[in-house]
Image (cartoon, rainbow, N blue to C red):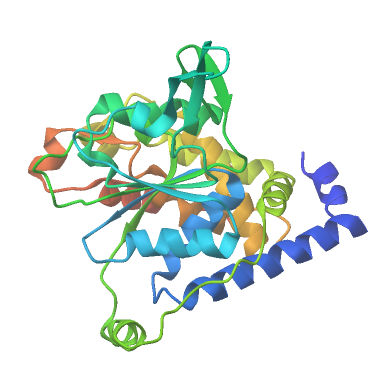
Length: 341
């Protein structure tokens, strides 16, 4: 299964592409670190999402630098960045764009002209995505899956690469609308930003309360990012590792015969096939970032929780026992240990 891919990765041209991949990856992190303090795991997950061509949902409390992180990353990538502030009165056309009637002053003829919305960008920040109704949230569905949008029956391709980073506040319930499961499933990661350590908070104070304004410099371009996404897909994965990823995903489905007892007790709906696809793809990106030419069991286990935490639906038993999705997924990892390498 992986022999062909391994031989492909050994060519001189590919060695140069891999070296460039690692150089750009390290430089992007260095540039982001000029502005953002801490959050190593979050940054790694967002970078993996970029190299996979997936989208990320960033969940964090107010003041945890969600918006600043996305803006800084876009600057370091040298890509077109747009931001949409989601509000209850936002309409789908405010995202996708709309047709307007323009009149030719010389002939008097009127024609429809499409005016692009902010969705036509490489990096789209959907800020506080859960503050707008499902009708408007669904305007992103086609874009996230098909990299296109349809307005008045006309289909428009989006710029490539197209990368959605959506943020949401986990504690604010007033005036919010939970994301539909179909849309949640299209996010590669549900990345959680937590509080910084005391030392890191001191660094933030030193960085942001002086006259110096930190900025990130661009280190790559759209063409290179697209090449890196193809490179990631060429990383081989052993059949046993792929089978392990599938087994972990299937273990979250309460109706599956292989599901453990605690999943059957607490989980209503488990993860879809898309979860297994994303788990393998993200594992390939992480392996390449770590300097390896193959996916390991460790890659699968490290990425399992952030990729699946928004894909399983718990029942009232879990709520009464005060269990979260992360608790169930950790139990799955403990229940299904990785085979020896």
